[in-house]
Image (cartoon, rainbow, N blue to C red; front, side, top):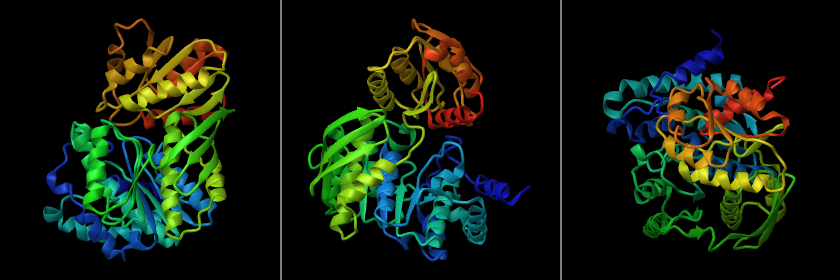
Length: 445
């Protein structure tokens, strides 16, 4: 076995809540393990300024925008996100470049002796998780790379997320919705309280537009922590936009000026994310970092974030998106209608696969009404819902229904059914999006 695969096997030998939604032991819901490991490593997470981003949807896109602008401003920038689409190394990047296999192996080797000590005390501190290991590894790599900035996306929730050990310059909360309700709570109020757990005393927070009950929670947490709150839609907003050849041309009115931006990410939700990103960047500028209107424009123009309403093939038109809950499905519908309004296409075919812990029936029904045919499938992920179970939720709808055993087979079937003039959308999870991207890259797909 090669060293890289051995390193991956080591990382995935710990508790992996992403692969399996197993019950979370109360002892495991604690940040002490992460603090202990980082302290033994010399606290690499404190080596560079940080932006910390939580939210239900859009936090990864927002993080990518901020990181791209920081890089365009001349800062060597580390970006930590999750989950990955294809390769675990996607989670850890410096100035757009994935961590190398050799660097990942080297970092794992450095972690091993510290891991042994933490595991020896597991009866008191709880078991290490794969996400905690990856988070610490990311901070270690960024420190080794001597980054000027770290942009860190929360994995799940906020208050007890492994990333919530940072001391950020500014925090952000993107759009909130009902997701991971088994862990975070079954109301927006409970979820907002968990997400707002990233707020630090005296550290400004930028919030996307939220439902009133979530907004009230965020406002109260900021008040209690003397944290300045910048609200999208109130303090900063998108004042105009239009789309041309897949590029959104935006005008965003901030607190410090008005910004013109060309954003190569499609959908209304990306405009919302860009507003939050510029709110964060304005605060960094106020804090003395060299970020200008020009570097903001340059960074947003260069941003890349795969699997979010991404056109992956033109003949036929094939789009993939990681929508995995009802809120995201509704945004995907809006984006799809907007995308197709000036295009002439034949059959509309939905390829959908979901995780078993999601509200798959609601998502499938929400999207199906926009399509002529639906092909249900499943990703390779351990939590993937069987394709036939997903199909059952659409059994009484008028849409033509097909099942396929995997994503490549589903997309091949969609192309055969729709021909060159079809519009095909592959969605339901980021795992489906990742496998759709792999399919699109294969010769002859």
